[in-house]
Length: 460
Ligand code: NAD
Image 1 (cartoon, rainbow, N blue to C red):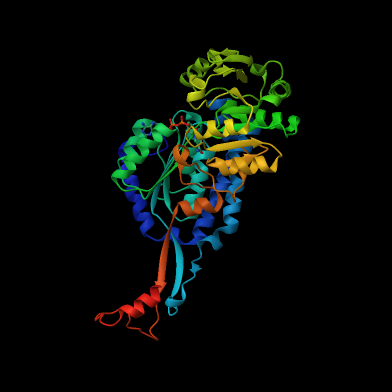
Image 2 (spheres, rainbow, N blue to C red):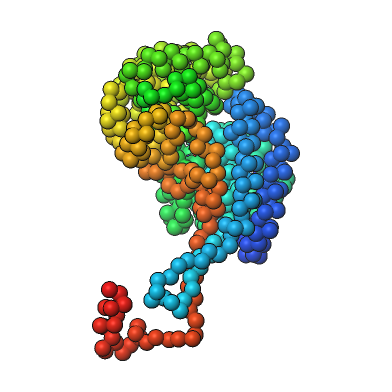
């Protein structure tokens, strides 16, 4: 194993603390150099990354480029803005503070821990790392053990290009995570399921460590009648079935206006054929389920409702065909748990109020999708629902916009990142107030006798 043995976890954190104390990471030029090194390292290992994802998830090369290696775009964006973000920012003061000046200094937090999931196992460990480096921190990465090939390549890349006293990888599963969580960090950035998110937060609370929790949930996709049907079905098909549905912001289920339901189902069948052919199992463009455990969990969902498209599966390959299910009940397991696989239930509504009420009766989702050109309907859905983010007339693409903070709300997460939001997540904003010596008004000093009227006037 290239990476730290578990018994050395304490030592590596100590080394990182020493490295942080040298002040090296406070230099913005140093941070930019490290980001450039990271970018070069990714480019240099592109082929190995593609192969690792192929081995873990049968991920098509194109999807690996679009959804994993594309983090290099984020590096360029951060490098472009970093000098500006790192500068102290002037803050305004009210007239009664006329002799003062106020500024906000972003400063690094120290040594941070980043724990990743298996579904986009490269991007979801490297993208937070970009923020950690940009903000001037040292970092320990714990990739998901379930995407083991990707975990290995992440460990190799980091060990080859970075000093472990600055950035290190600890590989392993729950045991490794728990060993790390027993230590004190200055921030923990976790991406994974809601249940494990609670464990992370409880462990962090013991050290009063702040957390960012990028969690999951059931992201609804509303489809109204005022749409371009052809574009809609293609965009839903792509967002749902990319990575075989194992995407935290995939549309989990459809809420479809009854009037357009039949056309939508016909359209989905057509676009699925267009994407993956008559036998998706033979398509080089269709991923597999990550593990036997997840395969079995998903196959159980096929008992719910009525399968109207797909439903075929092959345990030896961990293959489940792109599947659409109709006539599900809200009590069925498929409508209770996050699906996180290539199964798409359809629920119909006659009035948008029903769809909104259903969404609001459940935990706040990570993403909400709405297909409609009706401006009033768009406004209503935005006003009457709450979710981590919203994408109108498309799916999943919101994750690729660096100027949009990405994160959940309520059960779907705490905090956000990407672009400037990543820099902010891994920075402390230090408020600095400065007075001058040219004047010293005595209204706030004891003895207070006779000063109350002035104070009331000042505060009034
Ligand atoms: P998971 O919560 O099972 O595991 C995530 C990480 O936590 C892994 O590195 C794992 O080793 C570690 N872990 C697991 N159990 C642990 C425990 N008991 N104590 C400490 N650490 C533990 O998540 P997963 O199965 O890898 O990913 C799927 C989930 O992640 C889905 O719910 C999905 O929606 C969510 N997700 C969210 C985002 C986002 O950006 N919000 C992105 C991808 C995935």
